[in-house]
Length: 261
Image (tube, rainbow, N blue to C red; front, side):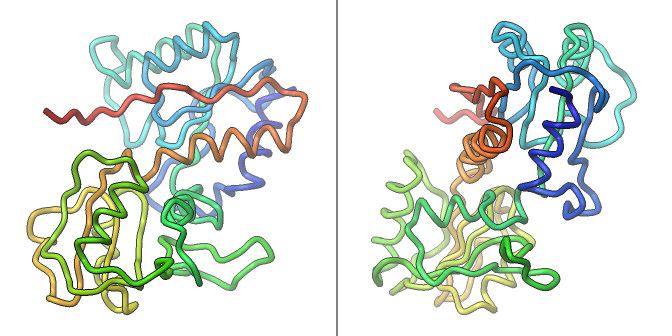
């Protein structure tokens, strides 16, 4: 098995060609010709994840977030990114990221969120291009809750579905049925969610001023990590399905860099 085979398997589900222009999805460390005996799928490529890959006998890592997102000036062990890069190269571990490519495909990040909520009559919130046999490409999902709820009930339902201890939200609305959502940092889609007719928009990384909403529309910030973590299992499953002879491991304890007290 080669790195290129794993890349082809991942991109059969989430083509790198659909990623956002500012993104860095794709092969970040390694060559498509390198041999692969095992793959570890994780959320962020940290030094700890690289060590887990080495201990598991994996010579390739596939993550959601890119290890190198923007240009870096130095690669040193004092910097978290530099440390992970150095370890991956030292151990001969290839690193691939499926970031907005996995956000934008049907069955990706936002669709997993919709599945947790049991949304019905779903469609892409911000579609781009013509639909394909695999579904509509674009950001976010729009759908209906299994039943109409009060704003407070809807917030409790979201907390239950995502196993949340805390939830940031704007002023609760009276009734909710139509829901819009987007995994990760979704502040840029608030206007799109409002125009869609949704009463509730669920995402992460919402800023203070974005919580000022019309009385018929509310926002729930469930956290960046919490909204996207299901993609680890999805990517692992896709690789296993397409490459059944390859040893594929999913990180059992992904690290959330945000702590609450």
